[in-house]
Length: 145
Image (cartoon, rainbow, N blue to C red; front, side, top):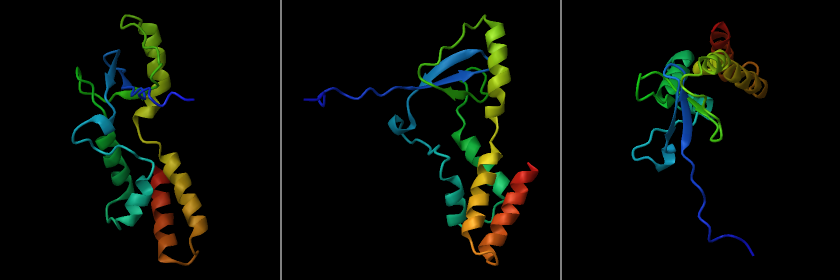
């Protein structure tokens, strides 16, 4: 005996703007008309499958720009937070400053994830292959960032 008749709760995604010191809710991309795919988990597989001639750093940065959710007030990038995240009061500057310090690094792409992906793929690839050479070159570009 289950609760199959109860509709699943579809939570809106929660975002905060560190500049405006406000929290916002937006519908999930799946629920939005003409949604842009913002899933970055398969980004490297898509890059190599497309045989793109584009620089890997530019490719990652463009993907992050497409996935960016902008603040309706100031047009700066907002951060997605957990649905039960408690947004501080707008006048609570101390809490917002602490959030700014801890969450600001999340505003830029984390190249370490993509460097690790390259290391794993290099181990899988044949050491003398063209694929391995390209992977090593792209890993070096990411490590310079």
